[in-house]
Image (cartoon, rainbow, N blue to C red; front, side):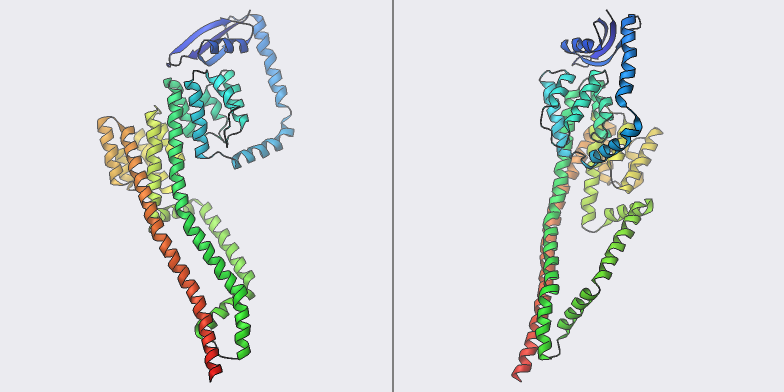
Length: 432
């Protein structure tokens, strides 16, 4: 009977090696899982019988045959990948998936069995085929992180490296729970940021619709009445009429200008210098700039802390944190920090040299380096800035709401004043 050499891990993280004499590789994997172990690598032993070797030789043509002619699969694969990119899961969906998998592992299920159960659980945003592919790869002897790396359209580098660190430390369940907490916190911050802009956007949209309705539907009717009396219109009314006539006559020009502006803007932000200029403006914009800075700094500190506390090397952690950031200015500062850390320096020194990160963040990281608890210091930084972000968003919303109401009141008041002043002029001419 064929022999298979295996490498597996206990739930405590201890690595176990040995050989099994079973009919095939699937039986070897099943026997390993029945022992409560997590298979890492399973392959035919060096002294395997010819039957085992011939069995492995037969598998390769089947795999090659299953792939089929590549030319016929090019279009479907491209379309499928495009749809998968469009349906990238949200942070809350990743948090739910991580929590569910951690709960199954906590119940004592082997990893392959837990992934099989994940195929039947409701995971919004993550297709069941993803869990099926993960289960197949793990059953074939791959690690969970290696299997997730093949699903890069679902799992980010942060997720994959965290899982990899959990596998090496034997604390995969704890890492999955930390990932769930990490994604939930980020999702909460994003929700607060978006919700703070909902009300101003609604008010602005209603104001624009009222202006358009009045200029295109109501004003022409008033103008026809005013022209019938042949009375000179007041300056405010004449200005409104001229603006309405210009929009009615040259609306196509306005549409072209809007399209041209969007094209120029998209091309500008597509360039490296343009993107950098926009990101610099975001960081220094009045009112909104503070909110953006707090969000970026909290995101960087939270991501780096989560990676370091789970055993990811500092250079890899900085690299992943750099990729998570959207702002080009802050990303360049992290790149310079990573290069300086490669030279043997601490994190706080190059971060301070960039003059991008606030002094409070630098001081807390420096204290963490002196006490040997950089992840804890970064966590404190993230919590501090997330609390400040919540307060700043509330203040920004409280400032924008009355400002939008005042702007709408001025706009509607100008429209009413223009119409009423014309009516008063007509009334005065009639009484004379």
